[in-house]
Length: 148
Image (cartoon, rainbow, N blue to C red; front, side, top):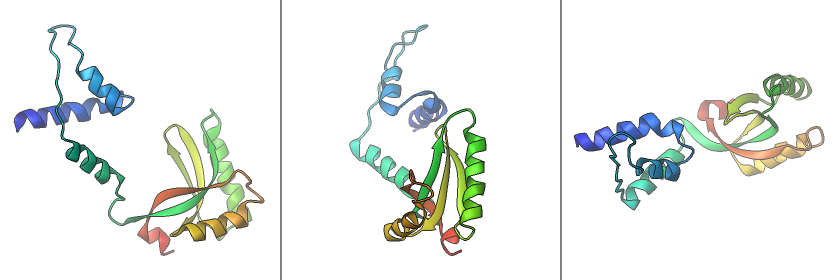
């Protein structure tokens, strides 16, 4: 049990440095430069799929819903442009909620809080003339936000 806990701690501590899980697993199997030690991993398929399913579930108090993404950029001026886009959208559509977020090196502006794809498509139809590059984005939305 201690060995499993130690391996999990090592995996959690250094997982951020790896680009993806298979690459990280391969790097663990390479001999250590000082002692020549290597780690051998044995994992059951059902455990891997269970962790994948758990990671895909929304957090408590959240549901999967849809927003319309009207802006995404990763340039040096992306942050300022995202907030400017948000202000412009709010001036045009004050009744539609907006959200600025930073995710995986990209600044994004999403609008709306739709529980169904049909609602999101209707919203997209309303704003697509102003934002022709807008598209539907599936996201987790807190239940309290949906009730607003």
